[in-house]
Image 1: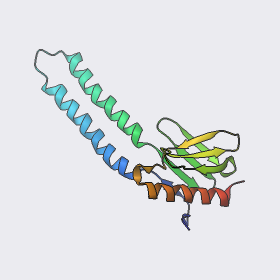
Image 2: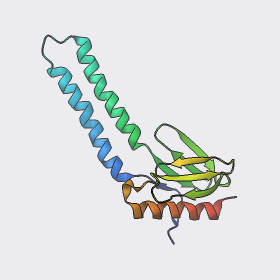
Image 3: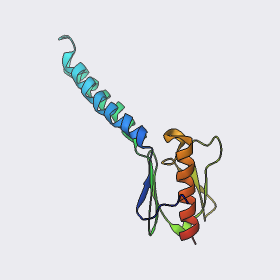
Image 4: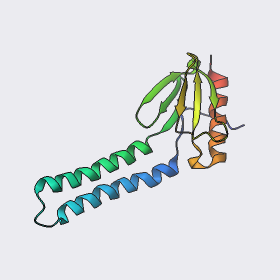
Length: 144
């Protein structure tokens, strides 16, 4: 059975994070060096904007590295690119991860669905399927 034995459990695209986090550091450093190395005829505000551009690009990278799905005894926390949402087990009625889906989705008791971007085939299709099944098993065991 693919169900995790103990709580808490977290699913996240770890390879994506392993690539994005160092890239964000490199971007900040690169743009800072460029800001310092600009020719003397460039003004201070140009240098500041160059450094801020590096911070902006790095913040986008950090946003892309954010997604995860965490489960504990009380429920599930879904962290997507911009928003986070905490769900009690009873609020989740199903877990879907169909062929071609970019990530798993949760069917909720109120009739809506919620993207669970932390479970995605970017980590490998088979691993993503196993993660979605593990979450589905937990929902079946702890759901309302």
